[in-house]
Image (cartoon, chains in turn yellow, blue):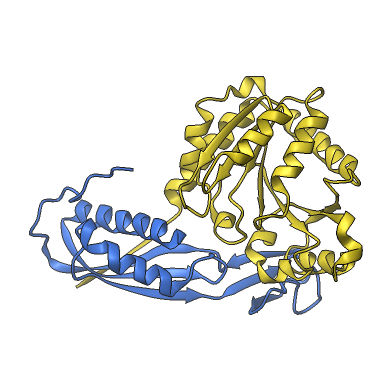
Length: 224
Length: 128
């Protein structure tokens, strides 16, 4: 018997594709965000509002992953996204770089400012698949419980921003804003956080400002 | 269920290594970090069920769990994380980096010392 040291990552193929995506989008200064959350936290609502409110100012395109149906993509088309590329994963629990590569064939990076990739609603599997994004943004809603970051540390550790959604329901939930931020920072000391309500519009301005700042940095090729 | 997808990548790596050496693989060691979002039992099951159709018969897959090890950038303390609190166990700083614990790798492969009997080509078509 001969024992050979290999040390090859099982994610290597995905990571290589992701690197190609990242480089291609960086050449055109496109800010690329991978939006992750559990199902029902309001990813599509956040994107819908964002597209509706910022379309006159920034050129936004979306890639939307859904296990079944194109309902989310339909909502974003109606909101006026420059381009909506749906990916129906057919049961697969996450998007991977191969799917995004295929979706990007129909997008022209030169005509874009921001690419928003809506991942499949799942706080486990999507966290370790690099899609070539600049950053992951994790969305959590106040109905989910403020201990989510501790229960799904991988996702919160790999995310740069936590958007806390549905703040209009705070009075009806045992959700402590301070607790969720503290828990997220135990997992990831660098994570930023924002509180919004897609329903009432509260806090969305700070999300838009964050997007503008990140896009400007990307355009100037400054580190995030 | 992403373990099935990852198992396929692992089997591809094993096949590539085997065919480049022309040797029959016998045992594969896989390092699974605790933060790799992979359940070792599920990966093991996925490997066992897909190995034969990828031409790898009689190969043993061994999972080697890797704990999460962090390094504090402020005080230099190196420590393991067993739960979800990644802050430095020495000085409570949050300015920390992960040294290990998120890997998912084919670490080693043991080969039989006689050449593979079958063709050196990988014995399947990648249809994806």
